Image (tube, rainbow, N blue to C red; front, top):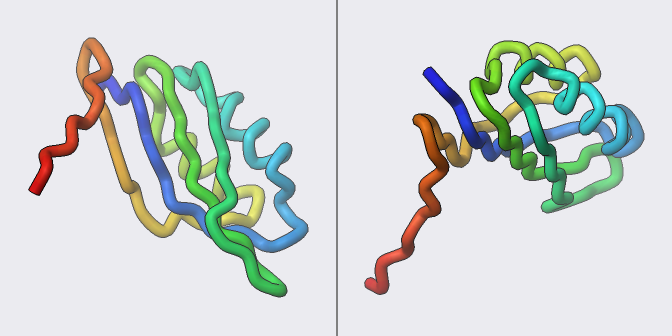
Length: 94
């Protein structure tokens, strides 16, 4: 399956891994062309982040392994885009 985009909800310690360490380990995975990390919430010991990863044939298992190796945890996959091109989500008015 050609994974082109992943949006992950990830939890990590407040100090470790740093956002730089997290982005470096993810960007080193085969197929990853870009990584964007946004802090979504923070308390005394933990930080929640949304991670957007784009590329071509992204190896999800290696992304997951890298995130876990630096001490963070994936809570959920919030978006996945696969195929030969990216299709943007179009919101319908309800």
